[in-house]
Length: 388
Image (cartoon, rainbow, N blue to C red; front, side, top):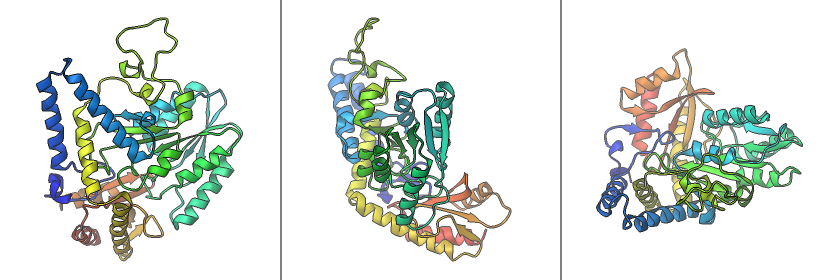
């Protein structure tokens, strides 16, 4: 896999949580698909069967990855649209409350804030940022924190599967079970930006009401394509929000008097024209990952590599890791003691061909290991950090 990624040939790369490198076969699959569409004609009777096959095969593959039937999988452009389009269609009433984890991405948080403003909802905060230890203890603490934070009017809980800043994994299936016992049965929205393509997701995706992911991070696919797994009750109760011809049961004519305009499945949350060739690229990347081993096997390798990095950073007197134990994912967040801003450290390492990123909350640096990471990569990063 590493040898197939041009982006990994001239740098030491630890930013898989931001964007994964695109393998050459995936780029070739994209260009081949684009060429085929042009050969058939971009808007001819000959091209539609090809496009339908691309869409359906991609939907089936992503649904299989998420452990849900295809009718529950909507194709999206990114995590944000996968979260926000069904979120804004949920049935809320004035005075309902949203419970949001304190490690959620600003894009999702801002969407919830605006939703609350428009519909007169209240927002409560779920504290999970401080959970940085043993996974079993973390799981129990999350369930306890939710039990304490839930109110009779809680209608939605927002919690990432894998926290993008600390790297802690959240017990999504257990949380979903917990919410089902609540009288209000709050919806569960999960940001899966850091989990899809990195850790096994079937159990969590099947349990959540909205499980939104992208293909361009850990799955090493092209930017501009992702998906969202939706529960049956979201399909039953949520209304379409941003509406286009792909949302409609009959896209051929306008119907001012229509009472049943929209698809009854996940397609009601798809909008309009998308870039079809990207689908061939994402399927190629997912197949290349599968060639390297099953999802649990890849996760085991990622954990072994992140543990090596975490342990090496623990040995540096000037470094403090955010997690108290070795991470259960490929995200390794840490702080370098002193007055130098993290962004400056990113620049200093980048000048040496070593690429990590800085985060604002909590203020720290983040390095990501993937199956394509090597021990030499880790040694080079640790050696460079020790000299900062």
